[in-house]
Structure formats: C-alpha cells, structure tokens
Image (cartoon, rainbow, N blue to C red):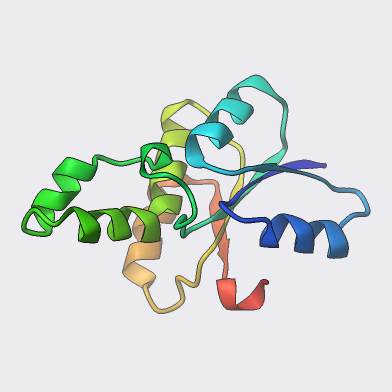
Length: 136
C-alpha cells in the first residue's frame, strides 16, 4: 500500500517507515503544493497529513495571507502563524478541490473539538484523525 505523507519535517515519515514498513510504502511531500502535485501525477492509496507547517516558506503555504491578515487587524505575523497552525486543513481542502478522493489520516487531536471535527469529516470525507500526541 503506497501512502503519501505530507509534512514539513521528516518525523512522521521516518516513524512510519520504522514501525509500519511491512506492506506499506511511504513517500514524503514537504509542502501542500508538492503533495497535491504528487497526488495528481502518481498513484497512492492514502494520505497521512500533518496539521502544522511552520518549516516551509510562506509562498508554499495554502491560504490567502492578506485576507487572513485582515482577520487579525492587518498583522501579517499573526496571519502567517494562523496559516501555519491550520495548514493541514488548507491542504485537505486543496486535495478535495483537485478531485482527489483518497482516504486522508490527519495528525491532529480533534477530541477536544467535536463540532469542528464533525464539519471537517462531513465536508472532506473520507478523512479521519490520529491524535498527534500519539505520534512522534
């Protein structure tokens, strides 16, 4: 089973390769745009998606930085932090907008946010999550 890991580091890919190598092949994309392009051009059976992307250049973040800054009284630093902290949601939306309906497993703990998870799971199915405190 070939899975694309979209993360800005290497922690998840290395951990998954170490503990789940039998029957799985893991490939990494370091940003949302790279991940969506790989999903469009290659065959995968699923996606493992990180939520926070604070190690990529701002031009590789999905989302409108200027419009987000307006939400934070014009503060581009807060806007960038918001986009970094929620980048997994933006990437998931871009995956679905590209017409890709593969199952996605998000690394984030939605246990404390049931309403948010209900909206995400309804809008972007098939999707599930693994609390990130259970990972690397």
